[in-house]
Amino acid sequence: MKDMKLKPAKGPVHGELDIPGDKSVSHRGVILGSLAEGTTKVTNFLTGEDCMRTVNAFKLMGVEIKENGTELTITSKGYKHFNEPVEPIYFGNSGTTARLMLGVLAGLPLFTMAYGDASLTRRPMDRVIKPLSEMGASITGRKNNTYLPLSVSGGSLKGINYTLPVKSAQVKSAILLAGILAEGETEVIEPTPTRNHSENMLEAFGANISRHNTKITVSKSSLKATDVFVPGDISSAAFFMVAAAIKPGSSLTLKNVGLNQTRTGIIDVLIEMGASVTISNQATISGELIGDITVKYGELKGATINGDIVPRLIDELPVIALLATQAEGETVISDAGELRLKETDRIEAVVDGLTRLGANVEATEDGMIIKGKSLLHGGQVKSYYDHRIAMMHAIASLVSDEEIIIDDVSSVAISYPDFFKDLAHIISE
Ligand code: S3P
Image (tube, rainbow, N blue to C red; front, side):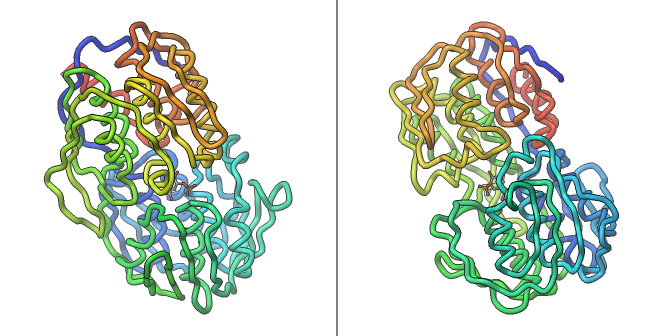
């Protein structure tokens, strides 16, 4: 347990930050680079714990992966040459590793076992096990094939037509990955768009994939090794975007951040609530739009967040709740029941923490109602070993009038190992 005491910040936050690589894109770079035959370099790779779980999974199957800082070099003979792992694969805290790897393992003629940490062991896996079983994989897990630990006997898959019952990029990606290893066509219909990094990267690696409105079609593919540049993670940048928006007099620039349309809901919300956001230096690299984001403090007002925007900001909702405590009026977040199935129940965790700090936040079944503006005071809060809850509370200390003590911040290593260094940098600069 590593607790953290954060003193209230006196002045505004300002300066520039290089935001570490995107977690979602990093996972996918390792996966496709390992499935492809040849050598793939992944630059600006996120070396957080979650992405390293995906790296280790492929190392166990015999893929050569060398790490040099934030550059990965993957040398693979292609998926047909993977070894059967001689030990169970550990997915740690990483939902993305678990769901996407199940898609891959389902398509390989191997027997594998997998397990996770206490949090991941409580998260539903049936959302991927069901469609992958329909494709022909044999997956057996705890509680009637719902949870980890589980075992997979894969291979000999056939394509399916599947309409996503949950708004989940992880489920979509698991089916697409199985689909490129299956006989026949796999069609996924996605009623509400979710992050599309898998589709973008499959295209870049030469997979057989086509996209028409809400329908994505894939078929058996041999991938060609392709270098990947990982943009800065907008979900990590979000903590500092909110920091600048809530602290009077602040201006912060976050460099080379991914601006993929399926991820930029936080920018729309900040603008709607009254912060100033400008984008500069836009470019497209490895099929993903990137740019620098400058956020300045503004007088904030409440907003309604629901419907199609929710998947575009799902991971940012804890810090958006903090933002709403500093806005005049009511913010109503709904259609976000998925928050209860993340690393922890993020609705309960946010309501618990912000209430302890003096905010007016109420949980609903699928969201939260926040009434602002509240002066936050200090106090003791819990991270629930959830990286995004820990970082949200750290940002709260910028506007609290006394010290905030977070019980355990070790989880920040999952997505943003240098978070506290970067936070100190913008306060003291
Ligand atoms: C992710 C998808 C989202 C997101 C998670 C990363 C991905 O999860 O919350 O942090 O990389 O595909 P869901 O697919 O469960 O919504």
